[in-house]
Image (cartoon, rainbow, N blue to C red; front, side):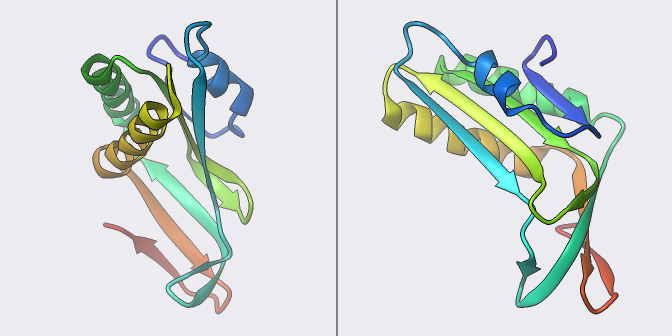
Length: 137
């Protein structure tokens, strides 16, 4: 992971590195969210995805991770993959660790929502019928 425990990469994501980034002896709960490319969306069969990132996406992700950590006091980390992904590939890992599970779950969910809302990464879905379209623009 980078200095801020946030990374955007074209390489397959390293689950162990994300988990390790939030490990602490005082924390009894680690929540790890794994966002996986699925084979359907909106009733249509999906065969693959492209994720493309704005040149400043890394900065946005780092700022979100740092802000969530500062505002909650919970250790958090995230890794987002860009490029061409197939069904079953991991697109996002987000993790939070805290003294107790309820806090770790809540902060991890907040982290995922803030990443989806605030990091300029766009998804183009390729459907089985040969059509491709950008989603969430």
